[in-house]
Amino acid sequence: MIIFQRLAYCIFLICILHSCSSERKPQLAETNYWESLKDSFATKNLESFVVDSQLQSSYNNFHRAKNRLIDSVIGYGSPSYLYSWQKSDSGFNAFTTFVDDGELGKRIIYFIFDSKDRLRSATQVAYLGGEGGIRYETRSRFIEKNTLYKTIAATTQWDFSLADPWSHPLSKSKGDSIFYQLIVLKDGRVIENKLSEKKELNLE
Image 1 (cartoon, one colour):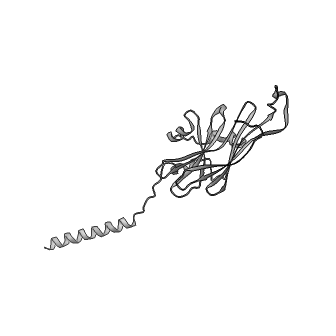
Image 2 (spheres, rainbow, N blue to C red):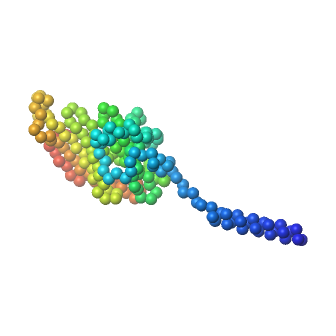
Image 3 (tube, rainbow, N blue to C red):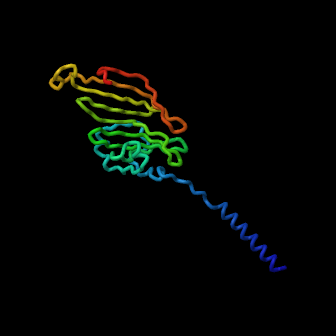
């Protein structure tokens, strides 16, 4: 009987100690794939996105973005680099990558993934390229927490109304511009609303 009582008491103590140990054990926060890489990005929390000369001269020093979902968006064969880690609402990871398309130009893509690493949206927020004497550029900037103002422009310094435009540069560049509002929704999707446009070249 005494042996049984001692055995029961020992079991009771073990249960109490186990319970206390479980209560004190810290709960480890689950870190997803993209969150684990946030310190690998070249910069953080940019307010505007533009492909300028400084970015073009430094992106080769950035970490490469090696991910099948990223590749499926930007196209296989174009190198992509981890550019900026962005503040985002709880449950989402937002960041940009810089994409080098060679002769086709350079791009910045704004990605949003959920906590399970599922792609919610991918939006081009900046671009720089040119063809046939026309410069194509896209710029974006935050005007509110979840709203961006985006400008797409095509400009030239040549008069294409002439038979030989290359011999007649314009005294002032002219171009077409389209202005958009980008809104990040609560589910991570991004919608694009056209605000206005300005036409001088009347490009299609």
